[in-house]
Image (cartoon, rainbow, N blue to C red; front, side):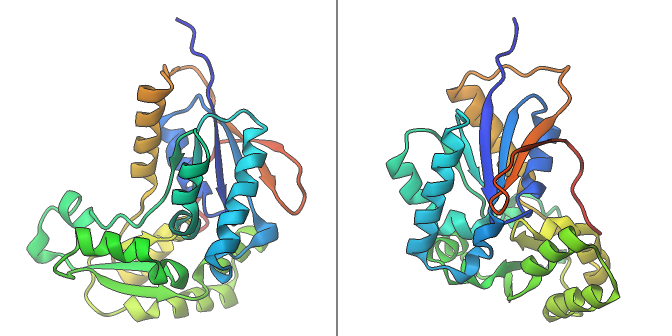
Length: 260
């Protein structure tokens, strides 16, 4: 039976959501993905909830013009602010991103030898959605919580202009609150952070836990059960990329997005 290609949309304030896209393409190669890097409105963390909801609806309307059948909010901030309103307004499925706080129960083999931290942006840290999730999945408060003001934008800058010694120093400064405290694992609570996964692991001597694989599994589940997706084994993964400053769609080939 020939597989009918399914279009999905994905957006973030910039390139962070490419960490999610990488995992989606590893699991589901034959999707037609339309990715919007909303750099004209970046950073999302400086906007109010009302502004983020309005912007999410604008981006959703842009993606619907591409006949997408599912949209992923590939950003913790926009998920926390807007996904509930999007689901109320639109009929298609939306998938959001949250810090994988269930890691303590699902991914840690020897709990008594593990010490976990979660690193988020300040916006995510101030959201009711995050604290509801943390209180539910970490009721004993075993997971240390740290925030970063600047790390996501530093990674955005590294993606666009390259990595040098000065930027390395700035990245280390953002990670220093987690250094030397004996953590074995750090849960990455922003989709930009997995783009420097190896650097974080080496600098902090930890294992990073990112949400991408779990988001990709959720997308596959929705596609299979609601949109009757049938996977193809012969497709080379590609995607359409647009940043909102240019407004131009460019076709790109899949790659593993990791900067350092």
